[in-house]
Picture 1 (spheres, rainbow, N blue to C red):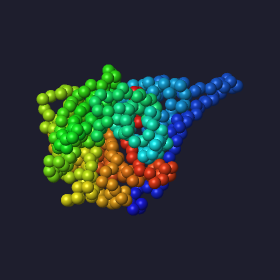
Picture 2 (cartoon, helix red, strand yellow; picture 1 turned 90 degrees about the horizontal axis):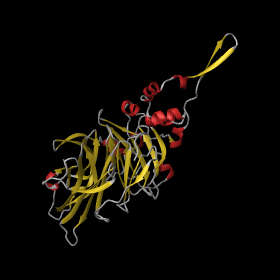
Picture 3 (cartoon, rainbow, N blue to C red; picture 1 turned 60 degrees about the vertical axis):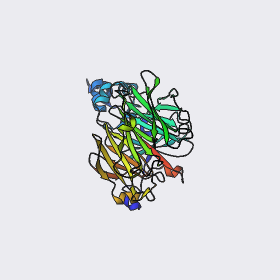
Picture 4 (cartoon, rainbow, N blue to C red; picture 1 turned 90 degrees about the vertical axis):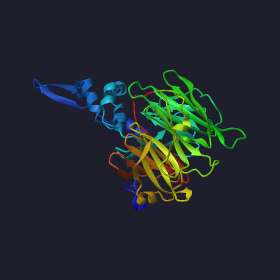
Amino acid sequence: MIGLMEDYSSWDYLPVDHIRTPAFNSVVVSEASNGNKEFSVSLDAAVPDDILERIFTFLPIASMIRATAVCKRWYGIIYSSRFLWTHMLPQRPWYFMFTSNETAAGYAFDPILRKWYDLELPFIDKSSCFVSSSCGLVCFMDNDNRNAISVSNPITKNSKRLLEPPGETLPDYSTIAIKVDRLSHKYSITVAKSKQVPEDSVRWYFSVYKYDSWSGTWVTSASEVFIGWRGGDDSVICDGVLYCLIHSTGVLGNVNPRHGVIMYDLVGGSSETSLMQTSIPVPCSLTCGRLVNLKEKLVLVGGIAKHNRPDIIKGIGIWELHEKQWHEVTRMPHKFFQGFGEFDDVFACSGTDDLVYIQSYGATALLVFDMMHKQWKWSVKCPVSKRFPLQLFTGFCFEPRLDITT
C-alpha cells in the first residue's frame, strides 16, 4: 500500500524554533567617493515601511515567522500591520497531528512548503480533548473535565483559559465550536451538551451555551429535550449558524439514516421553532460524520456504511449543504481508501479554506482533498510515529496567523 502514497516514504520536519531563526543578512553597499572614502548603506533602512509591508504580503507564513527574527522593525511590522494581514496572499491551513498519550506535543504540517514542524500547544495538559479552530485561534475542551476550556494561537503561543460554562458538569456527550470575526478579531464559542434524562431511555436533555470574547461571559442560548435522539461530539459555526450532529438512540425503532444535523441561529437568537424541527437527515447511512466550515459553507465528510452493516465503513464521501439539501462533491477513490490500510469506522477530519484533511486514528497517513481543484493528495509522512510508536493518532487543522490574539 505504501506505493500508493505520494511522497509517503520520505519526510522532513523541523523544530518550530527553526522557522524563527534569522533569514536575512543586511547587505553593505560600498562606493568610492573622492577616491578614498567609503560609506555603507543599509538596504533595510532604505526601504520604507509601506514597501516592506507589500513585500511581506507575498511570503508564506513560515517565511514570515522567520522574518520576525531579523530585527525589531520587521517584528513590529509583521505583528502590528493591519494592511499586511488583509492584503497578503491566501495562506493554506496547517494540520497539527499528535498522539493520544498524556502530552499534547506533535507536529504541524505546512502544505505550501510541505514540511512538518515540531510544535507544543500551550494550556493543554494532555491530548484527550475536543478541538475547534477559526482564523488563527484554536479552542480546546478537556475530555475528562468538560468545563476546562482554553483558547490559543498555536503559532504565537498566546493563550487564555475561559470561565467555566454553565450547565451539566458531566454531560454524556458534548461538542465545541469557535468562530472568529475576521474584521474585529472578536470570537464566539459554543458548547453543546447532551445528557440522558435519569431513568428514562427515550429522552435526552440538549443545551447550547455561547461565550463572547467582548463580554467575557457565557449565556444559555437554547435548551430542549430530544425524544429518541441525542447530541453528538461534532459541531461547527457557518455564517452565523451553529450546526450540530445528532444521533438516533435506536429506542424508537430502526431509524435510517442514524445521523442528522440540527441548526441554531446564533445571530437571530431563540425562536419558537424546535431544534428537532430544523433537523436535516444525512445523505446516506454513515458510520460517522464530520462537519467542516469551508468559506462559510457547511461541508459533511462521512464514512459510508455497508448495506445492512451500518457499523462497517466501505468508503468516504464529501457533501455540501445548499438550502437544506445535500449535494455530493466527491467520494474518496478506492486506491486512497486502501492506502490507509485498516480504516476504523470513525476517523479524524477537519478543514478550512479549500482544504479537507482526513486521518486514520490508527496511523499517521494524512490525506488532503482540495475542494477547488477536486484533487486528492497525500501529505509527506509525519514523523510523529518515529517518536511515539504503537500509539493512536489524531489531529486538527488551523489557519496560521500572527496577528490574532485571545
